[in-house]
Length: 250
Image (cartoon, rainbow, N blue to C red; front, side, top):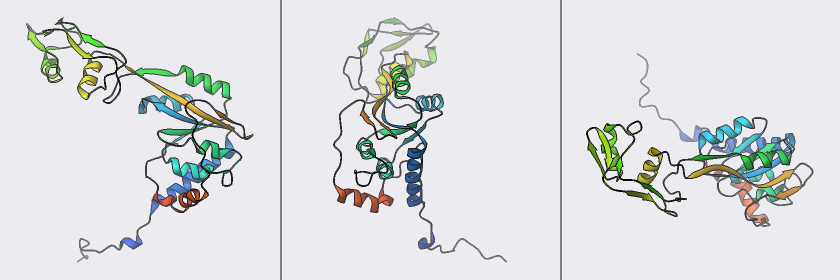
């Protein structure tokens, strides 16, 4: 009879740790892109939506995007003038904090900046977003083409003062969903979406630009402080395997 495997002991010391190698690969990919593209941009995304960001990458398919693992990418670029991969890249690294990413491209600065200034897409707010305007639903019957009678219990659970009359949903009184400056709750966001009220805008903000010539430009937002702590850089290099495991998008 074959030997049962249920009681087989596996030594964890023999398992392969993949995280460190993945981070080394990311450092190599970043440096390869530095050599292959004319420009680097650091960008941040306002009101991130995965599908919208996919559209950006599709429309700029000749460029390459990385998001996540800021500290690992900063090691690839270099954190100080002494450790930078190419001239002035440590200035780019100082912007890699928070919800930001890198874009490598061969397009001109004028093309990229004008494209991102124009690419703005309205979207529905999510819980935690701030209301940009007051929205009130008036007393009376709701549009039957949008709100079928079976939706009445759901609308009532969201806090709307609804009642069903002859198969048509009615609001018993005016209902203020939100006012300007409100931090929106999940219920408020659900109501706004059902009434097709978009209050946020997906767009990308360019923070800085670097060119292979060593040229560096600040493009927007606050100017971060450039790190000059060599001990901090050394610690980061030695502990690259302890960085967070958020996936980088390529």
